[in-house]
Image 1 (cartoon, one colour):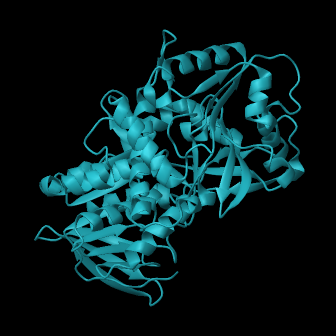
Image 2 (cartoon, rainbow, N blue to C red; image 1 turned 60 degrees about the vertical axis):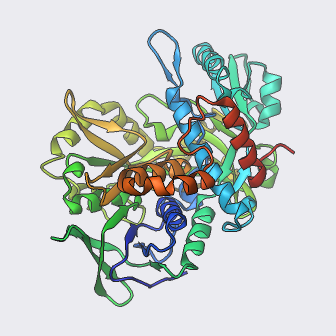
Image 3 (cartoon, helix red, strand yellow; image 1 turned 30 degrees about the horizontal axis):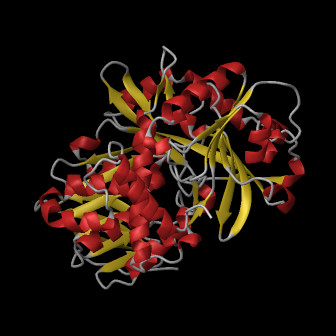
Length: 497
């Protein structure tokens, strides 16, 4: 739906019409219903870039199956600290979504979230031993106490029949399974959040309005030059607080702000493709998200996985991702995005990352040169009986990995997301990629803490209504975790039938 409403002087400007801006917008509106909020989106509709369900894998990232969140140490032990962090962040998202559903502010949760088991799957003795150690470590914590482990082919085949379909030989296999995993349609969720915001008199939304410039005024406010693409004219919007949640476009916009905290950051764009199967005979035999181990040199976002997807009530299967390279920072972006982002302040980190990540460069070249048969061979690692005619190739969204300055190496390629905020809290930008959308509520709560710190005392009670574990540690309080998880799952329709 096209929207062209703007405030000249709102209290808050949210750049980008994706899950991040929508989440922050709803949180702020609930905390202070008098705030005038302006959302500006470059495309003609919201939720069409990274939040679009076909531009991401839809995994409700809770670290139940993603092996890249559990690092193997030199002594063979498994570090699950990152997994604990991500699992707690996703539980915060579920709490907030459940509260919105209970308040009648979101529709039937079945429209955006579905219960789908999360599995890890490996083969070979070394990886089997790693997965066993990972399971033993994780299952001791209450977040992962329900996780199951098996090396028995019959059990693995029962969990996910396609994994054993056509698999020959006696190679060691292993799998873990978490029944409480989810598939999330972030596009549908974002659209519902934006529709709610659009119904508020104090919220205005302007699509097809890219931000051309951001500069600081003498009074401390931010002046945005926004292009109305329909009328081919510029508009000026001035606000005391700006959030840059424009996915890959966040870095160039952050650079335009010229805040000291944003200097030195660079971006490395990675594109992705997936194989998609719509054949009902195949789709009905698989109901899980199954993650494997990434190839040497592959970015963590390129961990291969065979997934059940539920989009608009229809189940399909998705396999990938197959990485590629494009200098665009968005799927709808420009070929000049990457070269245009180079600055004197970030050229050293970017060159250092290029020098230190030759394996990644080699991997991307190999991925770009893959034939359909090569992609089928990769799929057969998971589904040996797969036939190429059942699968079509889909181009997914762009992801921009963070490049940061590093005192020792000059620069490092960082995976995940990072908040970059001005010291006075007047502007904040979100950089990076996965597990982004799944942790949206946690990330936006961090932004509220950084940028609206003076108002936190008056907002604390309301925040705890919306997110019951706000200010508490689910990682350390098993009883609280069980309660809030059970409550959220019940409202969201995720409890076991």
